[in-house]
Image (cartoon, rainbow over all chains, first blue to last red; front, side):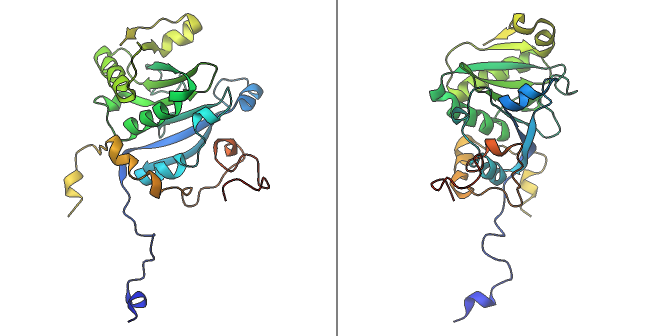
Length: 193
Length: 56
C-alpha cells in the first residue's frame, strides 16, 4: 500500500509547530582579543543570533560553548531584541543591574536557568528586564540588567525571584548604571536582597 | 481556533517545560551562517576543520 506518496506534500520535519516566545531575544558575544583592539567600550560586541521561539533558542544555545568552556575575558549577552547591551542604550540608560558571582561549577547551570527564566517570562516584573550578561573571569559573574532602576519594588522583586530560580544563597547587590558610569568601581549597591 | 487561548496573555513557559525541547533542537538554526566574528562562540567552529575528532 503506497501510503507515503499519497500523503500531503509536506515533508517530515518541516511542519513542526514552534512555540513562540513573548519577546525576541538576541545573543551577543565579546572576546578579549576583539576588546583589546577597540577604543570605545562595547564596540567589539557582535550579535550571534536573534531567536523568537523555544525551538530556535535551543538550536543556537545547544551549539554555543558553555560559559565555563570559554577562556577568561569572554562575555555572552542575551538581550531583548533591539536593546543593545550598553549603558548608552536608551532603554538601559535609566536602568541598573543585579550581579551574582560564581565558581566555575555552578556558572553554566545558573546561566541556563537565568536564560530560561527570562525567555519563559517567569519574572513577575519581566517587562523591566533588558537582558543578562555572563562575564568569564577569575571570579565569574552573571548580571541581570533592568530598565527602571528607581522602581525599587520592581527591582527587589526581580532580585528575589532571580535568587530563587538559581537557588542562590548569598546576598546580591543592585547597582545603578548611572553610578557605575560616574563612579566606576566605587559605585555602591543601592539595593540588596 | 487554537490561537484564541493565548490572545492577550503573556506566553509563559516553566523551566521544566522549556527543558523538554532541548534534545530535539540540536542543529544550528536553519540558514544560520557562522561569521568569523562569532565562530569562537560556537561548538565545532572555532578551530576551522581538520582536527579529526570534533563533532561532525
